[in-house]
Image (cartoon, rainbow, N blue to C red; front, side):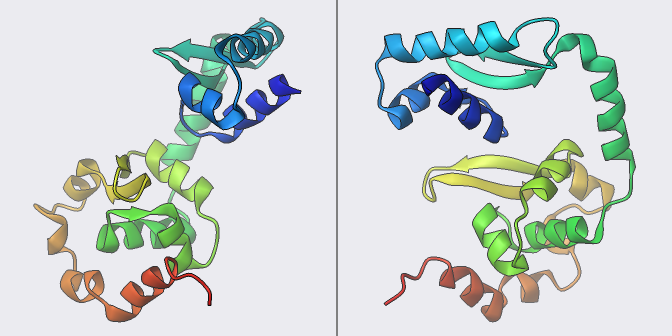
Length: 182
């Protein structure tokens, strides 16, 4: 059962998960967690599996089987080469005008889950993800490549930047996320 839980956590995570975090979340000993990790590796790290478990510097992540890299590369080229969808443009605009901004704040503004859109924008190199110790979650900003692609010297050169960056209604919407119900 622990093995299944470890698999679920690693599958759901878009980035490497530290062994220490897994130990804390699962409230298990080093030995028990290592047994589960070995079990996952035995099950997945075979040539017949499309998914492998990589362990590096105390972090774990599911990755695709290296023998399938050509297929995955073709898929990623297709994802990156296509035009941005309207939801992607909306999300990118929110990040450009209100960043650094968290995923829940973006979702509060858009009203829908943005996980796949954020992943796609990260893959394309249009946004950056950084850990914010104050908010205790990642925040998103536009990348230098995005700013350069638009021919800007600074993100504040975007049209109506000041009015949208400091818009009271948007600020209230974001702040409502932090309010606790009475």
